[in-house]
Amino acid sequence: MKKQDKTPVLINLVSTIRDEEGEQEAPMQLFCRGELKKTASGYLIRYQESMPTEDDSEMVTSDVILSLSEHRVTMSRPGEYGTTMVFVKDQRFEGAYHTPFGDMAMAVFPTQVKCRAADDAGMVHLEYQLDVQGRFTAMHTIHIDYCATGAQ
Image (cartoon, rainbow, N blue to C red; front, side, top):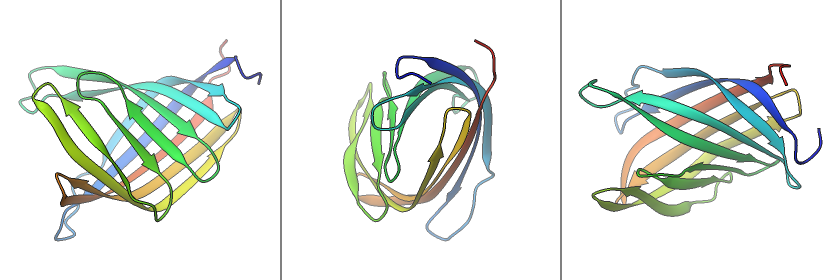
């Protein structure tokens, strides 16, 4: 794959959250289409997530951009509820979660960062602690598998 080429991919994402007491919420699973692009330092994956609002009255769609390299994963969500998170094992990253009502301080501390990326298929596995406004909120696990669809 050349650096400027984009490859359509199928994405399977599974996310779980454990609270302070270790109680796990029901896993969230997302199947979607996205695109993969080779970069000088690794790969970029772009896709959209659609989630229901708290009252289930409508669906909210967010763009997601993953930047993948051997020991570092960056997840960006531009837009009204935007954020960027950087995942490097055992390194705390502090940033902000932007909302129309104001920004909230946010930090991630990854305990596992695994990434295997290639032109045709790959995976990302992240386990991290999430703090919001200086307080522990939950332990998160995100596992993403992707594969090229072959359609150009």
